[in-house]
Length: 175
Image (cartoon, rainbow, N blue to C red):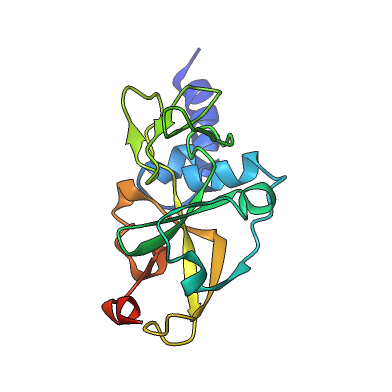
């Protein structure tokens, strides 16, 4: 086989790759892959009510079935974890006896905070969904909206972004 016969398919393949650079160019964004693998879950923004409803520490499963999201309130912060393994696109399940999330497909394990734990095959922690505030941040009854279409990854240092959580203020403790 001559060089031209080898080069032509290679050039066609390179032309079909999306523009840009980085890991997302060739293999695709894992966030988008996960969204496409679980089309049965509604990814539209949804209201969760006032922040004060979620102040008590714990895990809230109110939106797990319909939206694939669990609310986790701990350390004066509320986060909305997407219950989808970013690597496989499969729904993770909560193992109450171990107090961990597990992916039944590849046995990946995550803490209640969503962090990848132990000797998991996955490369990414569970993602946080955007939390929008419909009013002043210091209002204990500010209305919250969770947007599963906008997500934040720990591995990209996005968990510290303001939209990835709701922080409860000290003023709320005084009430």
